[in-house]
Image (cartoon, rainbow, N blue to C red; front, side):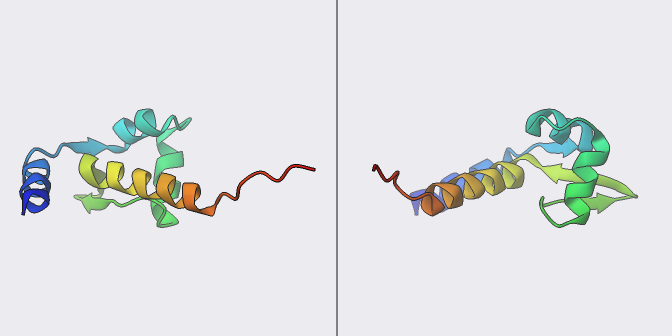
Length: 80
């Protein structure tokens, strides 16, 4: 129950980001790079009146899931 309440509070306090905001957040070189990621379905986004908009909560969750996946896919180093 506490997790559901925390999720709802986080959703209610969400921020809407522009492609420029995401560009800075992801350290991408241009807005076009972010839009290319959207077209390849690499980022969660919505279009509103032709503009790409993003939920900070969704972007954060998406990036954390990528980090979690990469941690699970790395194998321990083998020594000779």
